[in-house]
Amino acid sequence: MIRKLLRKVFRRPATSPHHEPALIPIEQHGIARSQLSPAARKVCSTLQEKGFKAFVVGGAVRDLLIGQTPKDYDVATSATPEEVRALFRRSRIIGRRFKIVHVMSGPETIEVSTFRASQDAESAETDEHGRVLRDNVFGNQEEDATRRDFTVNALYYDPGTETIVDYHHGVADIQQKTLRMIGDPRTRYREDPVRMLRAVRLGAKLGLSLDPAARHPIREMAPLLENVPAARLFDEMLKLLFSGHSLKCLQQLRAEGLHHGLLPLLDVIVEQPAGERFVTLALENTDERVREDKSVSPGFLFATLLWHEVLQQWERRKAAGEPSQPALFEAMDEVLDGQARKLAITRRIATDIKDIWALQPRFDKRAGKTPYRLIEQPRYRAGWDFLRLRAQAGEIPMEVVDWWDRFAHANHDARDELLLEAPPEAAPARKRRRRKRKPGARGEAPATPESA
Image (cartoon, rainbow, N blue to C red):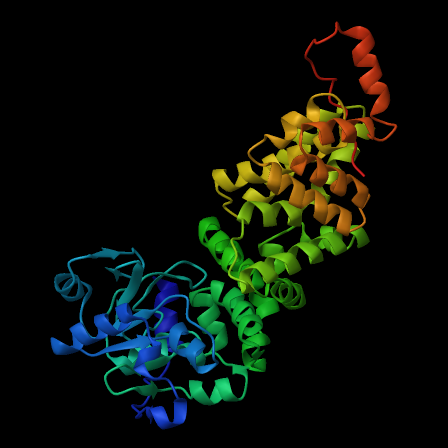
């Protein structure tokens, strides 16, 4: 109570004077209503017909201005969540911190939010660090624009008039390739520390330079990310990694001193020449797939980012005398447990990561029935893709990758030939098996995985 009283007396910002927004016509911005999704147009027209204000807002307008196709659409309106819900049969109110409405139209989901009031420290519910926990005070469009994080995200497009409403010179900032924060950056980062990560992601994705006033406090305020729930941090990390510019994003994270709150082991990884090459290849591959609109796997990408730390722990345990296979699984658990304290990696994704890692030593065995069993594994393709990355990084010979590719696509006779061509290290195991087992007996030699 004392803290809030002092903040109220000494730090309460003066009320911003009212100012008219810039109304930018289609002749200047070039966005026609036909470029919007049918669902977004329908939501806006339905709300407007009932007397409410309604605009496509934020990222969709920004992306259209820079020539990109929006992946989703948000609508801001003067209607309350309950009023929006009453107008659309296929809709639902969601959210705790901010109540919003999801309106479903065919395969699309439009996120509809009510204009929010200007926020100050004493009116919002915050934690001891200033992070906003709950605030559902509704306001007008000008206040809503002030509440948004960056000027390029505070753009409102009216499909009815094809006009952009711009309160904070966001269109000019896009033209000048500048990412600028609305309001005092330090205050905005305290309200929501994830904005620091969002600044890095948007700058890389849009090719915008972060305004010095917004960049300067980041390194100092990076510890605030410690107070962000792990699940939310993980969601933001996925957005960053699958932005199509993940390599640039991670490089910028390190430059701004933010990576410690996300991937604490990233420094250890990239400081190793082989590890840096491996991570770079993985990120480049992910960016290429995103840009080509191909499927991407969180499990696969996190497996690549953390592999060299697993490799280091595995080798350390084997050197201490631990059996190879148990040592690998202990190393996997140790690395993932270290990440779990920062990122709420879901159980499903963690399982995918472990499956990919566990397959790697099995690729060393190219004799007997082992190859037949391996190519039948559900995660074989992901494991082979991971193996190829290791070869491209110089960790293992590319010959190993080529052999498995030929074996997987060969007929039965060709596979027999490939087994006969197995490298010398596999031959003794095959001979021992023939001497020790009766003809036709099934079995597999004890696992002795070795890492390149």
